Image (cartoon, rainbow, N blue to C red; front, side):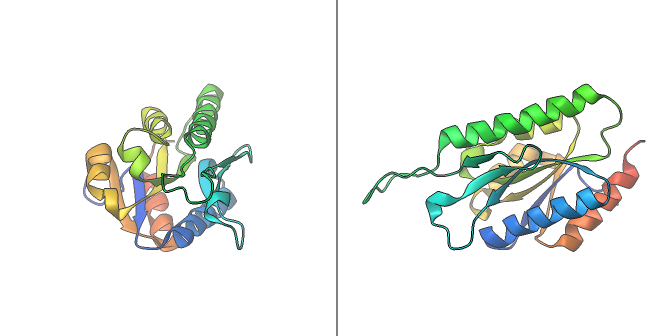
Length: 182
């Protein structure tokens, strides 16, 4: 497989805001090139608090809250499992709808905001990752350095890791699209 790009590309090397912005930009560029883009990215309104971060569905536009308010002085994890589950279900519905259309899937990419601690533990967006891979649809994501070992075990040789730049995304997609039938 020398010279070929993996089905999944995970970006690393930037802070959360930079990487999520890059994923949103990649979605715009891919769409402009005629690619069907499914998935979710984090949306952080300017000046927002941690609890205001949303997962924005790239097909439906639906926004799911990523964090829940635990109240003043709370020290627990504020991730909202219901928001994550709803976001994953939305991606799975979009993948199922794309599969129902039939035809070649080489013009489709699923963007998933990140593989983080929740996914490393089998929760979060894990089911959306599984659905995309089962459908043999390309996936663009990011991976938290703290769970890189779990990512490598999860994705295996289906994935590559690259610096968080649009040039890397463009090169990955260009090479992958050329290698796909259709």
